[in-house]
Image (tube, rainbow, N blue to C red; front, side, top):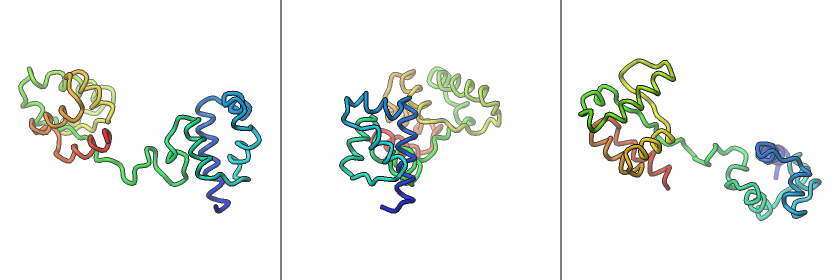
Length: 166
């Protein structure tokens, strides 16, 4: 392992540990001595090589996927980001309110929060789709199909949802 890679790996390990509010000593305590503070510290500084097995065990201890600890990976380990979820607001305006009312109100709220009133399209996050699925009492994939059938969401959105649920 190159020393630069070890330092990047160590920086990721330190970031995860500090996000969890743990000191090096806290890691040793929480793990009941399984992870010695001096060893974890040397991994974090890049002074000591960590085996794949130990890295997997450390990821498990922190409760994160191994790929979150590897340098050069994006969060979630995705090689490319999933397609964006873009609502067509012009088409949404033509969907009967008894069907699209909750979505129209949700989109209006997002527009208000963002100060985004272009009125043509609105990007939403995966979390927004999950929230809407709860409102509509459907799974995200079923709701996605419904929004595609209304012409409000591009068929490319299927990839974003299958990426998320996969």
